[in-house]
Amino acid sequence: MRNFAVAVWFLASVCTCAKLPPGFKKCDREQRDFDECVAKAAEYAIRQLDRPLKRFGLPSLEPLEIRDISVGPGRGAVAFEQNFTYLHVFELTNVQVTYTLNFELEEYVKNGKKFYRVADGKLVMATENLRANLKNLFDGDKVLEAQINKVINDNWELVLDQAKGSYEVILGKYFSAIFDNLLTPGFKTCNRHRSDFKECIRQAVEDAIRQLKKPMKEFGLPGLEPQKILNISIEAGTGPVAFDQNFTYFHTFGLTLGEVRQFDIDFVTETVAMECFFPKVTYEFEFSFNGTVMSLPLTGQGFGWIVMEKMTYNMTFKLERYAKHGRKFYRVADEKLVLSTKSIRSRFENLFDGDKVLGDRINKVINDNWDILFDAGKGNYEIIFGKYFAAMFDNVLARASIAELFGGP
Ligand SMILES: *[C@@H]1O[C@H](CO)[C@@H](O)[C@H](O)[C@H]1NC(C)=O
Ligand SMILES: *[C@@H]1O[C@H](CO)[C@@H](O)[C@H](O)[C@H]1NC(C)=O
Ligand SMILES: *[C@@H]1O[C@H](CO)[C@@H](O)[C@H](O)[C@H]1NC(C)=O
Ligand SMILES: *[C@@H]1O[C@H](CO)[C@@H](O)[C@H](O)[C@H]1NC(C)=O
Ligand SMILES: *[C@@H]1O[C@H](CO)[C@@H](O)[C@H](O)[C@H]1NC(C)=O
Image (cartoon, rainbow, N blue to C red; front, side):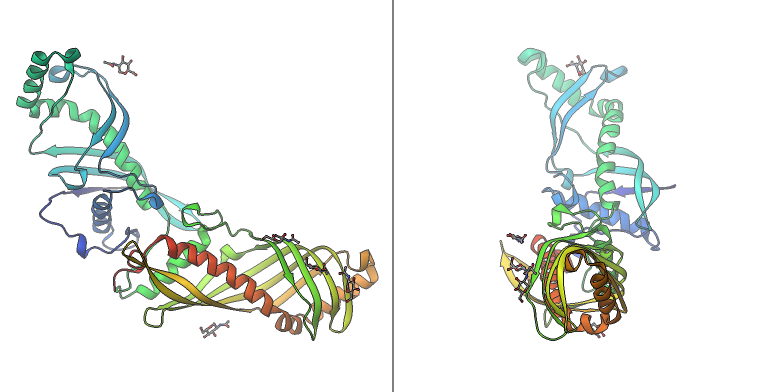
């Protein structure tokens, strides 16, 4: 547990927005200036919320809408029960109220990394002024209504003092939830002008891949554990791999355990070079083969698996720029994937209509000659998988502008 306070000042005259990095800043607890980073991130975040940011699960703060709020009668000046529906708070993004947010954070571990979440949040409000106008009091009695509004406005300090506790609790919970969203893992963005941009983006991509144990709908990304390809159909080539290959339910396991060894984006040539290393990748599928392998007949259909260890997926993306609603985006114009591996084991069940002798023999031939077969056969897979990853990358690029993802030029 760790306690710290973030005092966020909203002064219209001092807008430091331009100096802040684009996108939502995620703060690493290991970094020296964690507190300052979080304060800046929160301020920046709040200023952005004049529109909802769905991809971060954040509502708009202009206005902040609270559907139902019920405050019990207090004692003293504010001894009345207050129920509001559709309470709209305006100008939260730009007002001269000081909200001091005290968050108590707790640490938790996800995918082997430590994150914070908000364990408790307290909000203290202070303002220089308050004006209120409550309409339709006393069933619309104008005289009484004016009277009570005058009393509230004349005594606003007293009223605020006594009433704010309840609002602080409710708004505090609300901001805690918002802040929690900033601390939870999502896609990290990196500013291209940072000196550690290369490492930042490499890490961000690796984190993103590891998070894909579950789909990320807001980015149009499917889950990758397993990666599911409905069917693959490859016509017989010539040479060692001269057989028709049809697969259905082609599932790949182990992709979310990848290490991104390199993710270099060149903004001049608009290319991305990415190298991903996987300790172990397992493919499982229903297959149907017909033709020859290493000049020996191969036919049959059934269940099969292939395990590749120390595998590298080396991807190159050529990007192109386009404009949408006045903002610039990238899309993938071309891609190339090169696969390499240090070992392959495989098993294809039910070859030759279940003839065990023939089946075992051909499985042994395939395992003994894996390197020759891999080199001869991988080209088709590089094209198919390459298109798949390009489509995924494209989905992310389509949802955030170049400036949002990498900062301005
Ligand atoms: C306020 O809401 C509570 C709970 O819904 C209800 O019991 C109470 O009667 C309401 N008071 C007023 C003044 O509307
Ligand atoms: C392969 O999948 C495509 C859609 O992705 C479908 O149109 C086609 O019918 C499928 N073929 C087989 C043999 O399952
Ligand atoms: C593979 O699928 C194609 C197209 O559906 C079909 O023409 C071919 O006969 C299939 N081959 C095998 C070996 O299943
Ligand atoms: C396998 O290929 C041979 C000729 O190459 C063809 O006669 C046969 O019908 C094919 N079998 C299947 C299941 O596709
Ligand atoms: C991946 O491609 C890069 C060039 O982009 C190259 O330097 C590296 O050796 C390749 N790695 C593998 C394992 O092919």
